[in-house]
Image 1: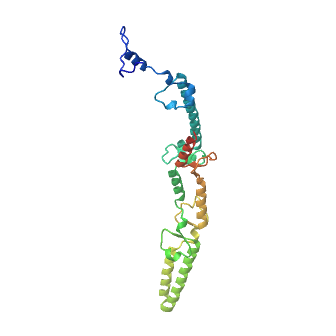
Image 2: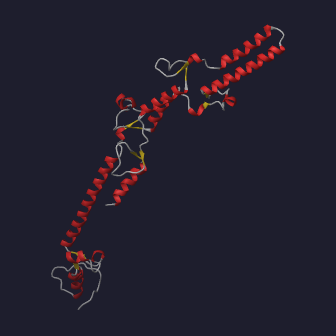
Image 3: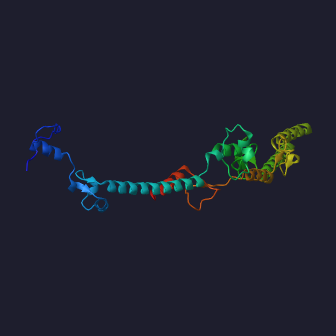
Length: 281
């Protein structure tokens, strides 16, 4: 049998005498039947047919492989679609977020504060809480009886009733001591009265008047600059205002089939839920 004479084949011209070289080159352009891979051989892949560069598949083998891949892709797409739908159901919608930048009244906090399907941004929560807390004293600024003597001249702190009583009693004790000293050392009644009046005037200017104390904060007295609430009234007003916000600690760091509409997942929780579902494909 003749062997290859050249790797270049330029065809056999009409009426050209045949040569072993031309015939061999022509035959070498054709695939060898022995290299054909049938559907059964492709499915079995016993000799690595699927990764062979020297073999070629039959049309049925190619069609079968394409159908298998198409079926798997269709199944994966269906699973992915279901996963995306589940995530879409579990995740909060950006359209439901209430923002401080909203311009339409229907999109603002006041119009949606009782809506169970909407949720506020951090900025909205901060704004509402800040508005509620305006004018209210902070518990951290409260001064009790034991702290009064070291903080009586601080304009940022406020005394408890006990602290005020302590201050008044201390002042009265100081007044009594002053009067006793005055009685023993001043020779004229006018001098004694002048000293006592001066001390009492200073005390009167520093202490709150009992007649200005209110036991509850109402619409009428909440704008008063002369009245002041007792501790119970201040606490009740703060509790009522905060309760009106209806804000729950609903942040969730995990999304599952047990998650509810009252929980808001973090960005990482949504990311983890997506990839957990995707990895199950």
